[in-house]
Each structure stands twice: as C-alpha cells, then as structure tokens.
Length: 172
Image 1: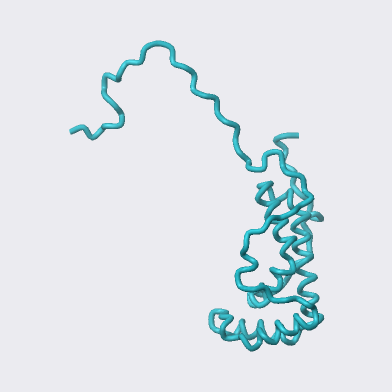
Image 2: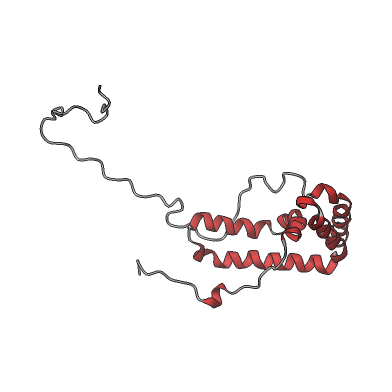
C-alpha cells in the first residue's frame, strides 16, 4: 500500500557485531578488501540502486558475515603476526603504516603461507569493476522524476511591463 512505511522488525536488524578497533581494521584492510570484495560491492550497488537501506538488509548481512568469517580465519591461522601488526599501528603516531613494515611483512607472509591470500597491489582495490548480480533491476534505477508538462501556449498578445524589467533594478 503506497504511503505506508514498513519498518523492519528488531529480528531483521539483529546481526552479530564486528567488534574491532580502527587499528585492527586498518591492519586488515587490504586483505579484507580482497576477500570480501564481492559482498561489499553487491551491497553498495544495492544501496545506490534502491536508495532505501531497508531493501538491502540481506546484502548487509552478507557483508557482516564475510567480515566475521574473515576475522575468524585471521584469528585462527595468523593471530600472533596480526596482533603484532595492529598493535604496532595502534602505538605508532597517527596510525602510520610506514613504521610497521616489518610486522606487515610477517603478517603478509603468514597469510600467504597458511591461507593462500596474496596482498593486493597498490591501487587494485580502487579500480572500477562491474558487479554481476542476481538481483532484479529496480523499476526506476536512477530515481528520476517524470518530465514536467511543457508550459501551455499563452493566448493573446504580450505587452512589455509598464514598470520596466525586473532584471534591471539598479537603473540609476
């Protein structure tokens, strides 16, 4: 029914939270971006096309689940080098990565050896990619308004204003 706002229930909104700090996110960002690229892009495409976050709850759950699985696998296989890396980032001034290259190399080699994940090259994650999705295209994907009706023809003769033009009010 148009005009009725459907609010999702609390059960629909309840997901397990990824409770990590900014240093942990910064340390894991490259590998997370490579491993969870597809769910993240599906979610962002849904948000852009639908312009309504309620319609993208299932895609958001997939992003959340991918993040949880990613951090679980890091904790299972490479907990020590990852902890050393994010702790170095946390204790360095302004979370600078350049001060922690030794810990980063140890973490990257652990991830490569145990999980088979290669750290993406600089700029790989920011390239424009097409997203193949199973979701149907929304009716109005660009959310454009219908074109307005053209102005009706004016009947009769138009005469100039007796007070002059409105565009030249500084006439002195």
